[in-house]
Structures are given as structure tokens and as C-alpha cells.
Image 1 (tube, one colour):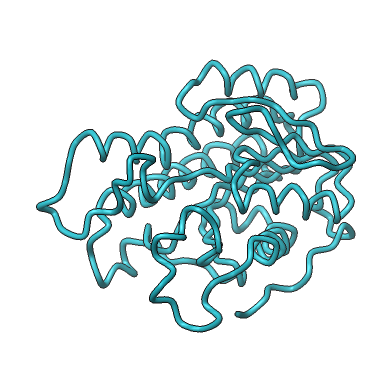
Image 2: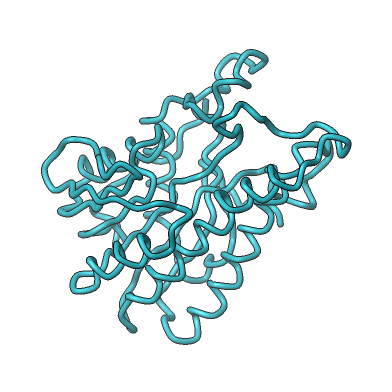
Length: 251
């Protein structure tokens, strides 16, 4: 596994306050812990149960990705001291009932597609709607959402995984839209998608058996990689998707 450069609280974009939506997942928890280790003073850690990792400065809050009112309430609670970094560390590959990615168009099911899009696209978009809305003009901040390389249209050479691919491609488009809109009023903003690689988490667990040696990344390493990438981004890179090495993922 190739590691990105180590993150540092000396970066000009290292946050004093951060918010992680999805803090109970493998990557989300590791991001909270990495931010705390890097010196972030306040980390709002959001999960459905309102639980977060232990640690000084970590402030758990509850939200439901499919309940806009809960997202709006979380954003309003941060309004007086908005985070300089917001990460939507949410997403689904296999649904709770065991339904996995469709390998052929013959397996498409409208209810499954709607659920995947609700969790992978609409939920993060609503987080952006309410968190971007509390960001003061003239301030530097970063909004990032976990995406995936399979959301790239130009890089799609295998097909399949229809709902998951479509949900991430749609998320990438929305992030691009948000970046263009925010640049008009918040020129120091950075809005990006992140491809974390294949991380040893509940999301990837059903698909780990065929992976090559070294392809699976520990959550702590994935978080360190992503934070390193985020701490080095500039407004000129807003609207794009980057992988865990800092390389741009094609649209």
C-alpha cells in the first residue's frame, strides 16, 4: 500500500473545528481519531445513535442521513462556531438486508436503486445543503464527501454495480455543482470528493476475498491518507475528486 504524505497541524488548512458525519463507521471513526491526534480542538462526531469515539474535544451528535430535519438541527447547533472541515463519511455498498451491487442490468430493482441513491447521493447532498449554509463568507473551509473511483464515467471499463456506480457519479456531479456555486461567494472554499481505496470496513467486508496482497487498507491508514490529501488542497482544486494518494480521479 502506498501512503500519502503524513498530515500535519501546521498545514494552513488544518482545522481548529471539524465535523464528521458518519463517525460510527470504520473510516469515520478513524477520521475523528486522526483529527484529534493532529491537534483539532473540537470534533463534532455525528452518527445515527449519537455516539462517537472517546477523546478530548470529540462532541458526539445524532443525525439520520434520511431525515433532513436532523441534519438541519446538527448544522444549526454548529452555526456559532462553524467547522473549517466537514466530512460526509457516509455510504452504503450492501444494504442491511444483504442486497449487494447488481452485476447485471437484469437484477435492477427500483426500490434498491432508490435506497442506494438516498444514502450515497441525497444524504450527503443534504449535509452539504445545511453545512455550506452556515459557512461565513471570506473564511477558508473544506467540505469533503467519500466517493469512489467506480463513480468515474470515463474510467468505467467493467460495467456492473449499477446503483452504486450511478450514486457515486451523481454525488461527484453535485460536488462539482456546489463548488462552482460556492466559489462565487466563498472564494476560499474547497469542495471535493474522496476515494479512500479499499478499506478494511463493514462496507468492503463481503468483497475482500479476491483482493491482492497489500490492497486492503486499515481504517487508521486510510484516514491518515485522506487527511493528508485534504490538508494540501487549494481552492483551485475545488469541485474535483481525489484518491488517497492525492491523484485526481477522472470524471
